Length: 605
Image (cartoon, rainbow, N blue to C red; front, top):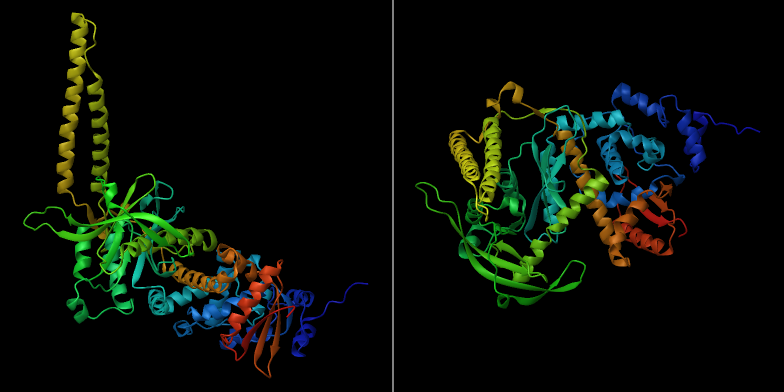
């Protein structure tokens, strides 16, 4: 006998009577809607279209709700500030509130749905019920809301407020910030993005550069996207340091800085791209300490200068390393009618087992030699962060195909200078080859005939003439380069040389959502790491929990939303999950837009 299919009103009455829905009943309900897949809340959808009144967050009783484990992230998402400045987006109305949209986006990010069009691969109805809705917004709705959010608020200011809060709450900050660039490759053909060197691929490719600011563990605070390849020093000077001056907490006062010349406001750590003596001089003037690798190290220190030191890493493992320290004076370039800038730094060298010496320079005189090395070599946490974000959250993806114009005042490399530079390199290459060939033309040991001698002299003379011509050409190119501006305003480019950028506020908005998701996931990992035999598997376990089924029960009398997470495949993981639930229950988190306190349990408990 065929199974009787319940009508939409009949299924809706099941929820109204307080009965528990199952996967089968939810599937029937989702397929019975006349407004679209899983659009079972027809009345509120019609009201929203006519009056602009948004849907209310209403939880029902459900069994085996797909991806119910995502609710474990709600307490940490809220503590990371996902909805802290929600008023910025509340002017955008519709069936879904700004809260619904933000939670939907961050849920998709946590599930590794890195492109909005792939949101169709998850059960929209069950994911919506995890938020007290009939379904999550569809792709075109999400795209429209992101565009609307970016039009009603300054997304960069929103991220700035969040980063300031994160710095205030970061117990591991210690006044040390890490800055590193990451190239977002662009494979499209819609715009002509400028080319830049990609170290991970050892190629020059089209793209933009994002400069990330994070703490010692690689946890991000904010990101500065750059279409034009201005370099780390200019980005630090113009965009990052002014923000850090305002945002970094617990900075000493001007009186304290004057009283103690070794005191600094904070310290920034970066790689060799930021190596500039003029820039170092400016940092010292602003009482900002720095730590980076020294460039062009040619000398070697004596082995007797090195001593053994014990370094303990973040995992608690100790290591004996050989370190040495000296005071070094760095001199800048000579310029006409200007004194040579000199910077005094601490130079610290680490000697490896092979005898290689890694040179680190810093102006921080308050930290020990071991602490400086720990901070410098922790820079690899940012590299690990980039790798993880590319693999898990796809930070390189294009959010939209919206093209933004480049500000006309922006400086770009002069195409004429670029052409001269290519010609210069070509001549230098030819000159090097010809000089090597000239050196190879030598007299043979045996006696030469008169004709052979003539050919030898002619060959030698011709090659010498060729070298002299190349030397003249090289000098001419150098003179032309001196008279040609290296950079010009974007407005001075010819029309056929101008280009747009694919970097826009919508990508910046989603990058901020991904930062919140990463920080929330990290917070969950920090709760369970100490309980795990292998702490490195914490993220893997958390990712599995996001996809776990859960039962939901609502107690409207006591205002409790009970989330029962289904057990894992391992007793050890179940024990860790119970510890995680206990920790999250202590936060007494109320689900947004409701008065229901979330209580986490295991199904068997």
